[in-house]
Image (cartoon, rainbow, N blue to C red; front, top):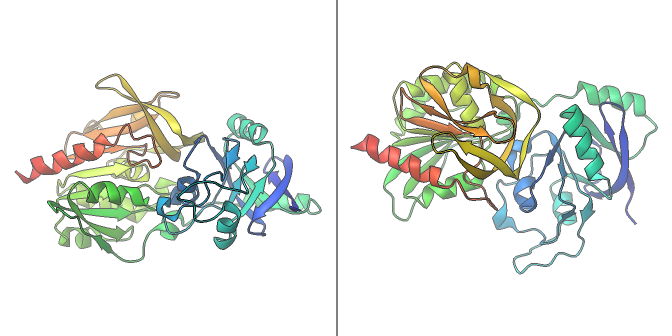
Length: 360
């Protein structure tokens, strides 16, 4: 018999559900994702650091746990909320169940909760803090704790500690990936395109990166407020002076823009899910993309040396930037998306072509 648990919101609203996963109380920033598949990628995406994640799709766990699908070594989110949790997964690749996985990762879960009503609150009032608890006896104290919560040290907590190398079977290029909380599939996409890859921590200096003599620089996704990463922004500003082909994704996109004088802002409830439309302005073509971010580059703040390349089809926010003064571009969405959609994977090919042109 599952234990009753409660989700208390910053505005005083609370929901009752049932507990699974690790048995612990936790406080975090409440967000939702609309992805219908890929819950393992969601659970292991470092960009969810410090957050309590709602899955809007009602049935989660039906194909179990498949470690080869993980996007990082372990989950970074604070808690996981679903409508229905499947206790008997079925898939030929399945190596475990969701409850056991969450317990081993020390992540609490909550199910049998009205995720539709919960999501509508976040959509109307915006991202807010919350607490998963097992009693309402300390409601006033809990609400005060919830209101004090802040996501801090996000990149520091999800980046690697020291450099790691990955070799391609048919190496043609040397690429440095700066890890701000990178998803594994970014590296896979580069390696299979002939890149020997050196992954360096977020704290790597410009001098350390240049010593690796890269043909290209990849800026990864990651969690948290981009403006907090003052040293990383300064490092990118120095690197840009060397005109090395550069490709940024998600947080990497935001940090590159900040290094060139643009500004960022926090979105009302962010873009999270595998069905986000991104319109390429040069072609008027709309791509369906995977996204996971709570901040965006402000369109009007982008310098004259750059131009917006993609916008979000729903709210018009910046989804991509091309730079005119250096061989660099970036996107807010995830072209490496796994398990999908893969509509924009061609951007990795565009990066490789940029490297080829620069080497001539």
